Length: 158
Image (cartoon, rainbow, N blue to C red; front, side, top):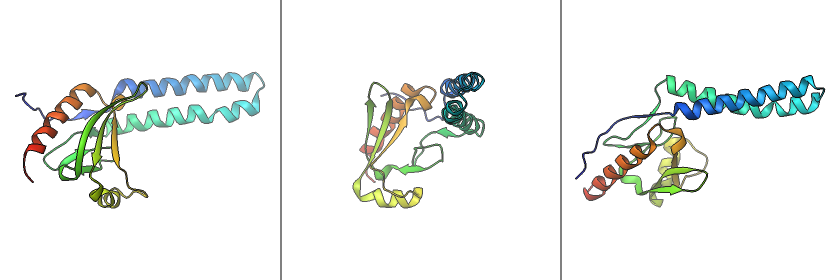
């Protein structure tokens, strides 16, 4: 049997830098459009680099705050806000490999949807929680270790 190493997984610096680079590139293009007398179009297009830059700086801030993805004896941290899904609420954990996005999908049992919604302060219940691989450093290792832990937790009675 493999040894399960519990560790934390940081936000990917590569993805964060890509978001910042995309935002700065679009911002440069918008400035060129403003200089070239496309004033209305330039102002309208400033929204796009603003979104990229906002998300890039948001991820950078979360990384500096040491916000990480991990699991413990209680459950799994599923987002950057530190929301947790407990092991007894989980029905299944699978890999989702669409061409655009690879993710670890945590499906919760339908009897726990409302409790999770209230605990996470959401408007609607979430059937499955996705942890996108582009957000995490070492995503394959994360998924492998999480699956080993999940198999171990499934075999133990509650």
